[in-house]
Amino acid sequence: MYKKIDTTISFYKFINITNLDTIKSKIYRYLDSHNIHGTVIISAEGINVNFCGTSENVEKSRSFISELLNLGSIHYNYSIINDKVFSKLKVKIKDEIIKAGFTVSEDMVSKNKSLEPDAWDKLLDQKPLIIDMRNRFEYLLGTFDNSESLELLNFSDLRKSLKNNQDLDRNRDVAIFCTGGIRCEKATVVLREIGFKNIFQLKGGIINYLAKKKDKNKWQGECFVFDDRITY
Image 1: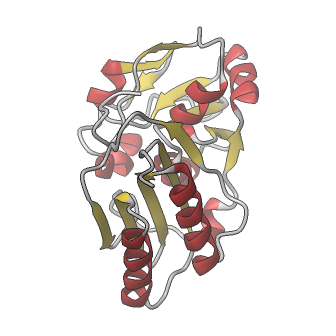
Image 2: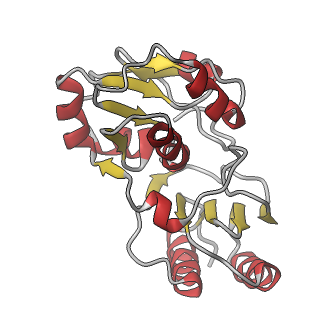
């Protein structure tokens, strides 16, 4: 019996992966056999996943990848959809799972501090420095009140942009966010490099926030997503 594609999931983990070709082949074969559409990026620094399918097949595929790579306890962003939001399945090997011009390790990001949406709102009430880690186009579509844009054209400009922003107050608490959380992992590493000490990122990114918060008065506009929906 045909079941309608109704679920999309995204997740990532910075974890050392070896035998990339073998892992790629195993993931592709499994996802393809379960009618999954989307993109999986793997590299020596980890895995970054965005795909859709029936709720049953999405859950089976999530479990398969988690067990294959021993991902442990990580955050998963789920969304309900009306039709497939990716046209085909792609599993790619790249130098980075999110392109920033440098790689990070699981140990480096394990020091990062992530806040669930309720704790994030409480932090924003304390008036920290709020930085949107997405590009300028995404920022203009929608963002949190009082957030600053780094005017990025590409995320790979991150390190240069942050080092050029010498007017940012290193002594303030800083709250950073992105679409699903992965860009903030690398951004936190760079912020520590340039002297910030109290850095907090939004767990699961904007997608997690909009899914869990009924009162969205701190958010204005729409969120650009990297699939056929365009906005969330």
